[in-house]
Length: 262
Picture (cartoon, helix red, strand yellow):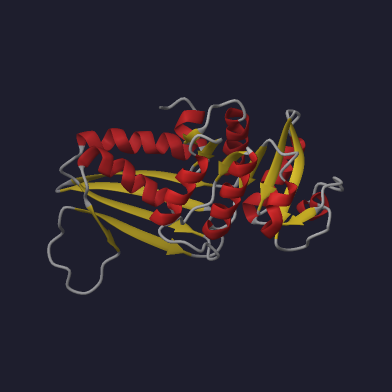
């Protein structure tokens, strides 16, 4: 059995991960961390019934890692960096779906993980999104002279914009076409469109996650869209990542590694 801890266990994704771990015969829930409801049974809060696993204060996570094989982190960037560093020091493997990291935070993460533990870190654990990125890469090769726009939409509570998935999509395109400028929205008299990627973020209601890339030319356009209907799409991928990372050598992996797309 793989012993799994979940950081951000009461969040939208965290509570779903908790349920998925409990329901999987190959996994054992060994820890749950949050800054709310400490001392309460995580199963009761996640809707699965009593588990005997109490919510531990996420700010003291280093005191509760000894019996955990893999820590799954869906928190916020600042907390995730600390969780990654503390887990790596304890030899705990990592699956990280938190987004919004700055460049300096990424450097901290790379230093923490290097030569210590394997970590799957991805802005999106959906299997469909990872295939979507491969399709975008293919299209960019053959539509290099088309105008490119990225449009993403999420629920009103999402804290970072653009989404990590949208930024990764732009990175995929730039890896093919070179370091294009990213223009975040447009207003006023902008003049003729330049050699750029347009980036647009929508925040409304309870949208789980939509991402569209538009390739436009004079006379035609191609649009490719991924829509997440449920967060279960992300949870299923995260569970695959847990099972993948448990026997891998130290280093940072992506979902393309997990899915054999790389």
